[in-house]
View 1 (spheres, rainbow, N blue to C red):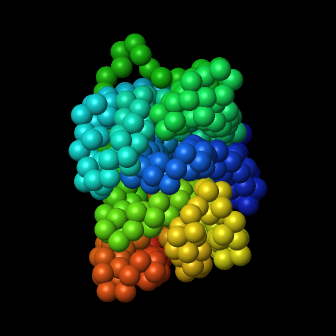
View 2 (cartoon, helix red, strand yellow):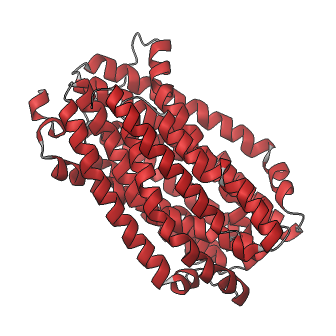
Length: 447
């Protein structure tokens, strides 16, 4: 395939970003439905069950962090090799990515068999909540192979600009989960009622369907990425390049897991209902942030490809184009949270106490989305250059270094109602860091 025929080299930048982003936005929105749908149906069982899924969420986020981080590193390296038209190297990178996904799967299977009860005991001594959490989380971890393989094979498609087929595989998984959730939780159509176990089983089956379809789409519709089997050797140089971007991305994503765990630990002594709300908020926020994540992830192959093709002007154009798009999405999200907080929470069959905590909290948090949008886009953009540190440190400021100490102080001194202002301080610090550090790096790279 000639470089001039690749849309990442020739398509007008606004059109390219939308062309690449819209399928990814849809894909990520659909992917986030796994946890949203589980929580909506599980909330119909009881608030204890909803709290259990909130406590389980950090370890689920950790699997996502490892899967997404590794595949983003593969994507960045692979898109550059495609820009250089080195398709032999592309195949070697693909094989390395598959092996890394399988190794990660084995690690989390071991965690699922050995560590779940201990993890749950750290956060709650409530027998019912703990039992629900162990049941749900064990299944999600032990059968996580679909999650890792689908994520990796979807990035193979994205690396060559084929975001649409990546979206198709995610749609298949999400629809499977959506159909199976009520059937398996409540025992419809002759199936036994499995309760919270049914939610977990529906999730992993959806992930497996997504993985199978992603593998088939790569095999039959992605001729530029053909994994190498014969004569393949694991190369240290490829691993270093993958994890130069992938490791900061894993850390960045994993900080979400650490943050949710720490926030749960801060809130649990004061209110289990606050923990349930925070789990709901984080999933709603993650769902609404997915369009920005999709746009940011589209930037990685766009920047990587044009870096490989040595077209620095298109990299500058991409960054200048993506920022207004992301800020516009953030304003829409802010409006939704400010105007419809109660309606959003009513999706989860909330108690009056949860509404009393949640409605004002959503309104306090909502305006911070604008600052977060800029931090995220800048971090993703320089990740496409093979520099993952900006994304990692900005996320560390947003989700841990500033947020957790300040949240602990606010809840201890002023109660649960004031803890949400810690998010304001964290987002402003991350915004300032990302803005000034990205400017310096772009100038250093001649952009």
